Image 1 (cartoon, rainbow, N blue to C red):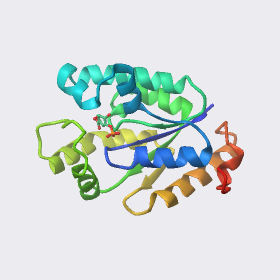
Image 2: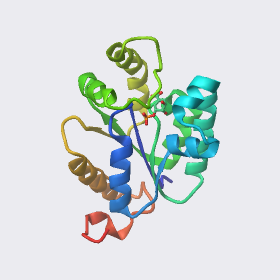
Image 3: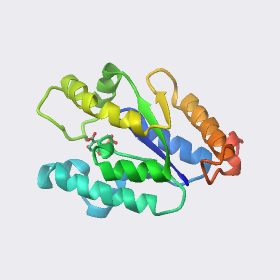
Image 4: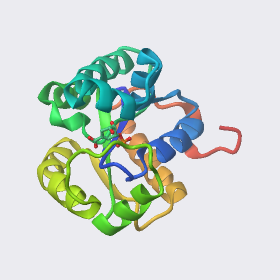
Length: 189
Ligand code: S3P
């Protein structure tokens, strides 16, 4: 039975911001796999990439995903590359309603330009990097997604409302456990 809500998608698609917004609305904890890695190691994601390499980061990321999935119901904002590992995909698919956040390449690129903390993933220029990695990742995101939302076209508030309705529907259909009473958007949630 699915009892977490996971947000997947490319960097800059809004997973962390929407995750926090949703967790407040659902009165659930919000876990972010990147933050869990940083807390566990005492290093930033960029530092791990530069000192230990991407493979070491991916091992830590998988361990932190397991930790999050083993805990109580939560909104789990995942790192953009978490879906590259087949085991991660299986675990996410088993335990989570999965929402894929999308945006077009230009929107993602603009959002990422504002953030200097993310390590480069290739030697390509930023736009080309997004295009190249998206070509590999898109089918993986799509295969895992229970719901897809374009965050380039709607505000986080609207997106959170759509997700809340979706969670209600899946709960009513018996496919999701753990719908809190406040999901209707009652003011004190
Ligand atoms: C990565 C995305 C990052 C972080 C790391 C690798 C990726 O997370 O996990 O830099 O491979 O796309 P965000 O998607 O939260 O930026």
